[in-house]
Length: 56
Image (cartoon, rainbow, N blue to C red; front, side, top):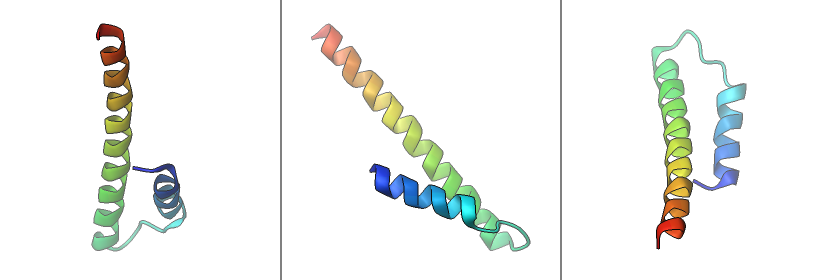
């Protein structure tokens, strides 16, 4: 995910009110899940690229 999109999604997460409505709570949970998953994938891809560079 590109940095601008991540920053926009983090801004939504940080500035929205995530209380009272079950649909909003589920939206917040899914947004957080997506952000964390994207971070994990990006970190893994960087790690894997380094390993390939080292071993090829």
